Length: 102
Image (cartoon, rainbow, N blue to C red):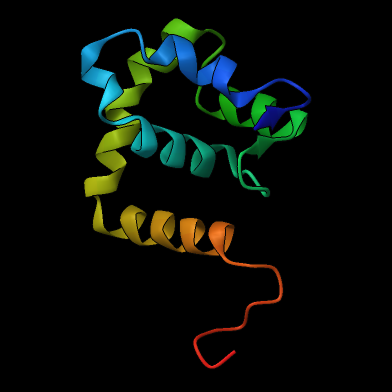
C-alpha cells in the first residue's frame, strides 16, 4: 500500500490509537479511500491524497480523527452507501472483468 511512495499504513496507524477505532478500520479505509477518490486499490496518488484531504478540510491526523465518526456515518446514508458500495465493487474487481457471465 502506498501514498505517493508512502505506505498507507503510516496514515492509518495513528488512526488506530484508540480501541474505538480498531474494530472499524476496514470501514474507515473504505470511506476515506472513497472520499479521496482513489483510483487504485491500496494506493493514493499525491493529487488524490492532498486534494481529498483538502476537500475534507483535514490538514492533520487529529483533524482526520475528528472526522472519522462523520465519515463512518456516511455508511448509514442509503444514497452514500450505494455510492460507496459501487466504488468498492469497481475498485476490487479484476481488470477486464465484465460480470458474472464474463
